Length: 153
Image (cartoon, rainbow, N blue to C red):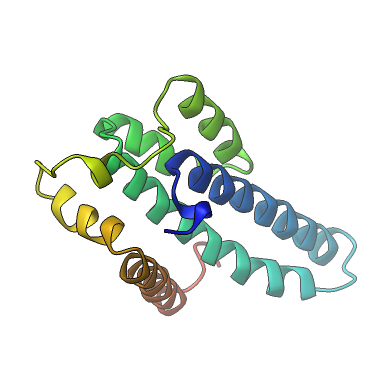
């Protein structure tokens, strides 16, 4: 497994930071479009990029929550932190301080017990297939979001 993917804490930190950075890009693009009325290029570029990273963050949060056995409440809080700008950075630090982000994937060493742990353990133990499944999931969810349209007109 790639060094990048070996640690849930590292993966989570990277994706949470990327989500916040794309929020900054989208907010900057919105400023240029709606306040200065100079260009809508920033919204076009960062809107799509943020949408993809937002979905990636939600998938990553769910995977980490299953592996690290977070409560449903913590999972919901992690997912909800993706909605207000930059809150993913706070939640990642909160999770790290509380010991919710281990340095290794639990399901690589432990036998899966719960139903959702079984497929996740298989994906973690087969990293190429796991990564491909993650990318395919993000792509499929992005297509669904594009078909559904923007959240607010």
